[in-house]
Image (cartoon, rainbow, N blue to C red; front, top):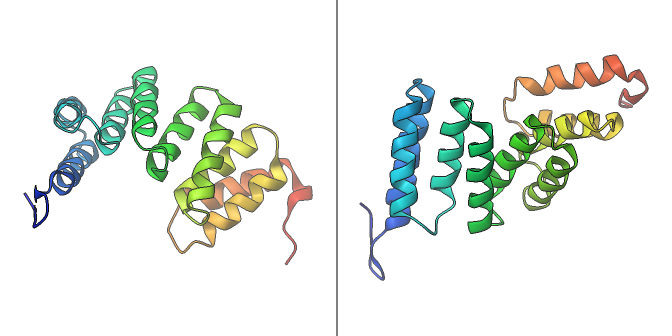
Length: 171
């Protein structure tokens, strides 16, 4: 556990390491173990958003989408400026067909992090799903131009262009 001269042991640093452990469990397919570990984090860090984000990820990985939605909502309630929590919540709303909610929430995340590629990708998907292809194409282009490798961004942009060729960006 890290130590702060002013506050003693740094719980936030320990929680961050623990959320990374849960993310590793998820990456290796240990979904139930990840959920258990995330629940322990939620109990030990009741005011933190990050444990609820990884809990939502674990529930989503198990197909428990309504539970994941609730976990992401709880994360945003604890930290309304957490871009990852907002983006995950918007993506979950999108997957559940709550399209306007997804668009509103991801808009909040974009205001906080205008060039964040994952956030712009979810924004593009929400715009495309709500039949706003020109804006979707713009959001895909921002995601592509961010320098991050986002494999879904080129595919999404191609899809938008295929069903709405009038949105081909000027060069």
